[in-house]
Amino acid sequence: MAGSLLKRFIVMAPKVVFVLGGPGAGKGTQCQKIVETFGYVHLSAGDLLREERAKPGSQYGELIENYIKEGKIVPVEITCSLLENAMKVSGQDRFLIDGFPRNQNNLEGWNKTVANNVELQFVLFFDCPLDICTERCLQRGAAGSGRTDDNLESLKKRFNTYVQETKPIIDHYATMDLVKTIDATKNPLEVFEDVKAIFKAKGAGDS
Ligand code: UDP
Ligand code: MG
View 1 (cartoon, rainbow, N blue to C red):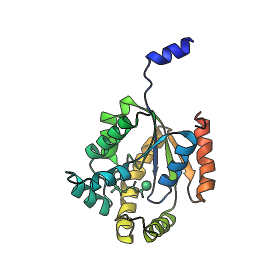
View 2 (cartoon, rainbow, N blue to C red):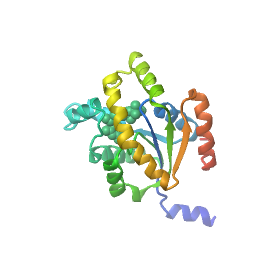
View 3 (spheres, rainbow, N blue to C red):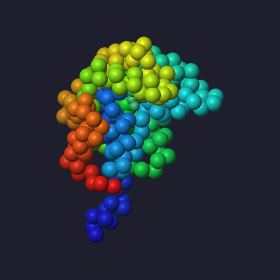
View 4 (spheres, rainbow, N blue to C red):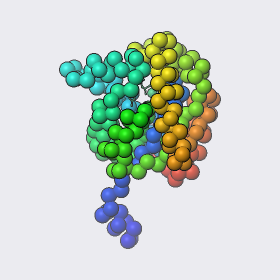
């Protein structure tokens, strides 16, 4: 009774899980399964940027396209405002933030504007060697992903950015003991067994 009364007066901070790993590591695929099983809302920073790029008359469309093709990271003000807006309009309180934060600029922008208003539960890191990632992205491109960056030239740049800029962010969260590492080389169902174990250990029930 007292507990439920208290809950009505204390606004709980939304829970956030960052989902990181190289291009093609399986972040999007696994996020979809987490949504189905644990009821989180999936927010892919890359998808939000692609949606923004596609909006007629978007003032950022061209900038976003150039960054994506070059495998570079879009300035955090743009990405963070898309994420914040998506969180708000969802009306939900548990989020998988996929493909963010990807560099120091992303991390600083997030820490300055959003971090204090949410509870970062952990960082889910899909660990996958670059040769397997490359093969998967090229397959995805050949199967008609329609992405302007699923080609060998863009991929080389994306991997470079991942190793130089994103890996240090994962290492940073590891020093805070927030990283859960998953072997992402297995097939999606096997990988999801490991993912499930992590969410269950965190007390996330089936939705
Ligand atoms: N991107 C970005 N900031 C982000 C997320 C993505 O600038 O926070 C851009 C970046 O150019 C990246 C591209 O979007 O290479 C594709 O990202 P996405 O996460 O869709 O690719 P994935 O890693 O899932 O293959
Ligand atoms: Mg993705």
